[in-house]
Length: 167
Image (cartoon, rainbow, N blue to C red):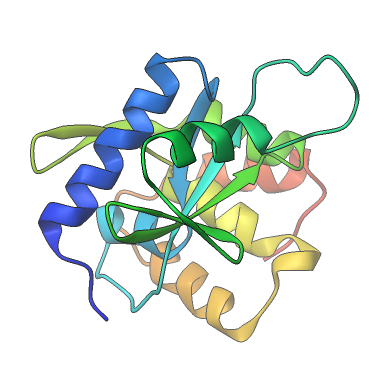
């Protein structure tokens, strides 16, 4: 079911509230939803959000603070998603230095009057190039992004080399 612009905007506002309230340290929209900010939209079911979490007291990463915060506001969990304003949202703790960089370098863009942090296309291509992420669909998405006139190819090449990745 296609997401309405209003629901998507409202879900983005919730992400910003989570950051403002310290539930998450920082975030970047990634995946197919990020692509809509850079090129033609692609069909998707959910909103993927890379997150940096506040420093945990233990080495175990837990999404419990996110689940408690969203549940207290009436956003139910459904499998690996939290339904925020009707938008299935998946929170992905940054699994690697590359993902950290994608969050830290994300651009703040505007979506219907709401600021949103979005992973840059160079980082999206690099994330799609990770061995664990190489699927046909992700290769297609990377190819779309590689055609962008505003893609900074020297930056992409530097990111790939720094992380030992190849297209």
